[in-house]
Amino acid sequence: MLKNDGIISPEELSPVVPPADRLARGPVAIIECLQDIPCDPCVSACPVKAIKMKEGITDRPLLEFDTCTGCGLCIPKCPGLAIFVVNMKHTPGMATVSMSYEQLPVPEKGQEVTALDRSGKDVGKVKVVRVVNPPGYDHTAVITIEVPADQVNNIRAIRV
Amino acid sequence: MSRNTEVFVIGGGPAGLSAAHVAAKLGAKTLLVDDSARVGGQLIKQTHRFFGSSNRDAGIRGVTIAEKLQQDIEEVSDRLTVLENTAAVGFYHNKEAGILSQKAYERVTYQAAIVCTGATENSLAFDNNDLPGIYGAGGVQTLMNVHGIRPGQKILMVGSGNIGLIVSYQLIQAGVEVVGVVEGMPTIGGYLVHASKIRRLGVPIYTSHTILKALGSDGVTGAMLSRVDEKFQPVPNTELEIKCDCICLAVGLTPLIDLFQQAQCRMVHVGELGGLVPLHDSAMRTTNPDIFVAGDASGIEEATTAILAGRIAGARAYETIHGKSPQAEAIVAEAREELRTLRSGSTGERIRWGRERVLKEVGEC
Ligand SMILES: Cc1cc2nc3c(=O)[nH]c(=O)nc-3n(C[C@H](O)[C@H](O)[C@H](O)COP(=O)(O)OP(=O)(O)OC[C@H]3O[C@@H](n4cnc5c(N)ncnc54)[C@H](O)[C@@H]3O)c2cc1C
Ligand code: SF4
Ligand code: SF4
Image 1 (spheres, rainbow over the protein chains, first blue to last red):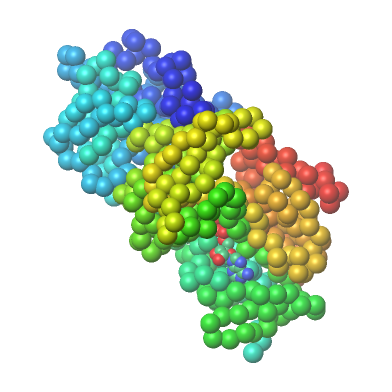
Image 2: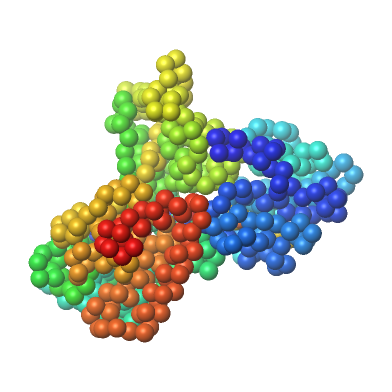
């Protein structure tokens, strides 16, 4: 359970995972921020206003799956590093996961890195397919990795 | 030597910098002293992106917020004097205080003082807790993020509040292995996004556990943990030995309040706010009418709320000297509204409760 060990269980995760038909249509965000905390940079980061909060800043974010374009602009703005963008339409059998990365060295495109699950367990090697790290992101790089499609909701970190 | 000022601000963290900025901007001659080498308070050690409201700096790093506040005060440098490496050491009667720098002891005559001294770290009792290699989280942060020194190679964190979780993350970024986070409660104390962030980098979080003793003779070589029951009593035969060369304690903060006691402000103990705090009204005025408070010294909270409370204190301190001002009133109204939204919701519950208790004591609620 998330509140006991920091690991989001599949049941806890399910409300924030987009439905299968939306996933099939291409990139979309998964916002793994499940607690009401006084935080809201994700809301203003989204250019198409897909992230809402019920009443205000102290609520958890709610994503309108159909509005989200999967652009990934919200990823580096989240201080909780809780936003991921998944793309199930990558290549047959393979998907991508994009995430924030704030360690050194920053991997390069094409590099092989170790994929980790939510508990930090090594789940195999994956390839970095994109690195976005402009000055505006202030040292929070957004890394996209290519993963087997069935691992898309399991892999949540990398070790370089 | 002696100095004369209208508003005297003690402590240059987010609360003190904001208070001094507002007071000087409204037109008061202001003096700010801070006992560290550089103003910014806790913010200069915070390399992570802040939580909070995006119209008050959330999503940007603590160090960057400190830089912004420093720019703000430069804008009013004609009316604001800042003395670093200078500690306020005591209040006298007749609106006088003493300040001590490396060069001299001086007296300050003021009309209103705003005390923003922040907080001190709590310690924890366990066997061998005086071994070299046992640090407070603030000390670890100062070593690592201000001086660029790693405190050790393998570190055990005690406390899963936001500070324990965030400092663990910063340690990983600095290349230190965090061998675990120990938490006496059955659930994680800090924000769960911070917990997940270190968990997925492989850091185990031991909830319902405590540290029984530190191992080693000349320095830390490990720690003995044990499971605890609902009454926080160690459960026999659940001991667990962990190897590490450093133990970091992140077990809470207590408001730094000696100056208030010395100025004979009435104090009140509010557990939700971290212990004894000076009684104050919604203008942040203590029971000593010339002395205001803001930030963690008035109750442990956050940088955003420290900034807002500092703005209120700065505006009200200005008004006690120069009389009512619509500009000051506007600053206070805006800050109050922002504080209200930040403290709403379930995570703000404890703080709200604590704040209401203080206001009730002064008959405002
Ligand atoms: C690890 C960590 C992570 C945090 N993360 C966040 C976050 O994400 N978001 C957030 O909003 N908040 C966060 N905070 C909290 C935030 O940093 C504090 O709440 C805030 O700094 C309090 O501001 P302050 O001005 O009251 O005190 P401080 O920042 O502590 O400043 C007090 C200043 O007063 C000086 N001082 C003390 N006594 C004297 C004296 N006698 N004479 C002269 N000077 C004196 C001190 O040297 C210090 O510079 C975090 C804190 C920590 C430790
Ligand atoms: S991925 Fe883009 S469209 Fe989707 S929520 Fe984030 S910022 Fe908005
Ligand atoms: S910015 Fe991140 S941590 Fe903050 S509310 Fe949004 S998703 Fe949650």
